Amino acid sequence: MLRSLQPSTGNRGLVGADPELCAQLLGVDGIAACATTADGQSELLWSTEGTSTRLEDLQFTLGQGPGPDVAVCCAPVLVPDLSRVVASRWPVLVPEAQALGIGAIFCLPLHVGSACLGTLTLQRAAPGPLPDTTLTDAWLVANALTAVLLHGGPQQEAFARADSGSELYRAVVHQATGMISVQAGVPLARALLLLRAHAYGHGQSVVEAAEDVVARRLSFRNDENRPETSGEGTDGP
Image (cartoon, rainbow, N blue to C red; front, side, top):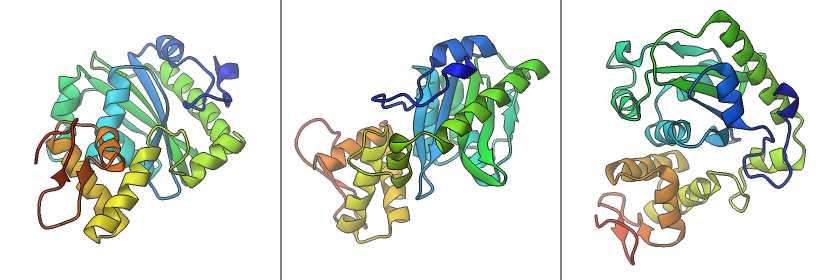
């Protein structure tokens, strides 16, 4: 499994291994690896389909959860029982994650020294701590993924620049954030907050809302009012 964790040419996930097999070997229900872009945002590189992908989209939309915390502190965040998390820690994420059927989340940094390059998140429906041997194996996977980020070649270089024209999972978010910044006359950080708020309020992922912006179905021309929508495929304001 570790030998298969290497850059994959022509794969938008950028990692050649099978995440479903990796999750099975680690005894969890799902796994996801994200990396941190040059502008400090999260980019999903590799994940099992379904719950883990939705969890990463949820953390990205809300800006809260184990992943964002690990990206800042560069230390593992292990949550063996999501129902026991203090409500004020992740007030919106916890009920949303529980609604996905998640009972435990374990997030490790992909790091070199104190520099966090990304995160590896394992999730499981059943609450309870990871066995020590499983946690050790998870760290081996995290270290292998870190090596992929460090030595991945041209695709990872494009990822680090977060080019809007690349095939990155959230490249459209970076493009939409720039458009919103111009439309609303606000800094990029504020533009991303506006996009996240709109996505959550309309039951979309940030990627879906960003696609509406890029397709010009959604505009943020006036920061003081609700976004303008036009055409088909979006909810009204």
